[in-house]
Image (cartoon, rainbow, N blue to C red; front, side, top):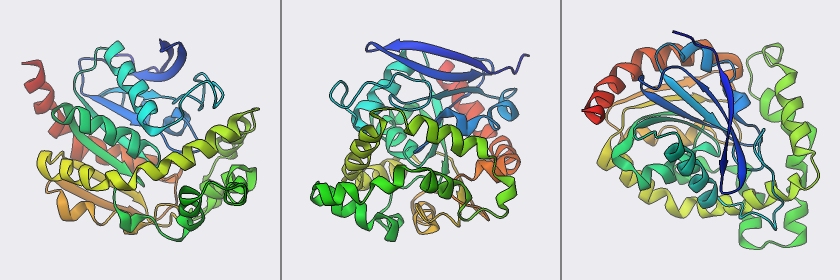
Length: 296
């Protein structure tokens, strides 16, 4: 079976939505949902390691990676709208059953899909993807102020998050060894952030992140009711989404494997081999019966 990664684009609502795809559609689908400020590029090393056992789909959201980047007055940059675009992509690809790998922004995108299709979500891999108030600590203080009052002062206080120093910091802060972190990753992310109009997109998405905490109770109810098998692979040194947000998953979910990794926000940069191995050994056996049930 070929495990080569394909680089594809679908036209969704007039936008070019780019995605990476690998593996046979006859295998369990794992939807890979990226965070900020990156794209499906964050999964570049993981996808080949899983392509023999999974059908992998890793989209870029509008305004990110290789997908279309309409300006803020041309597209509704909200988590609701981004989730809707990913939903339409799944429909276009005729994917009716899927596990999700969520990181950072990928959690609110993915959990919106889970609320819409709870019985179609076969499992979760959670890498620094928050669904609990406990996970929003000091890093979020100026962002919470921005949610409360979208003043020029509060807006300007966040512009530093869009500069190279901050992007590099997201990758290197908390890493076991900075020499493990490829500069290509944060250099690419920054080049895309620096496109004219993209800073406004990111500020809008940061503002709309405030729509997520009110939904946490509903997401937690989904976990409790549907009990998707869940693999936690959390960079414990992350200052954006610290491990405080990882532990509460264990209080709700019963079929869970919990791993705190000695790394930062982008755990795949240092621990891709471990994460791939745990997905294969913990999650894969649980997804095959689910796939057969849906197919049958």
